[in-house]
Length: 223
Image (tube, rainbow, N blue to C red; front, side):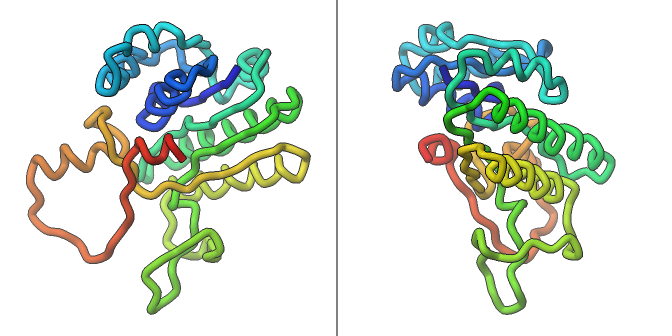
């Protein structure tokens, strides 16, 4: 059994599809208020058997901030894909970002250690990587991260979330972290990276300097 957190999100829904298409048994953690019909819609983009695949998902109502619910969600699970995260660049959301992304990851890592999970994969972000030095255009996993740099609350939350995973690795968790750039794909146009499309559709009065990286959500799921 595989557990996927954040299964109703852009990455999570595509990952659920790929895992199920390959014959895996999958449990998806969600909040009781989550709209799972969005997952069914995502499946319909890629398969004529979308409904059959969707119905094979074992949904589990839980909360990243509720350690007991995570312990229950991990019963019988061998591998975990941690895709759940709050994405926001609003200053007023900083506390929620730290609570959900950092504390939530801490809770999940602890539960995975307690349940002897075989393999743990966290979907992080390039926001957790360092800033390129002057004269350099690119960053990689070895670029130093400094809190003195101008950091968003989201960047701070993803960096500290990774620290929880690294701590888990030191305590024996078999884990890996992936750092996608800006993820694009079919999803909800009012949240996350998909806001890019609705923003451009409304028209831009100016553009800024600089570059960034983009990646198709299908490539993230495949990786």
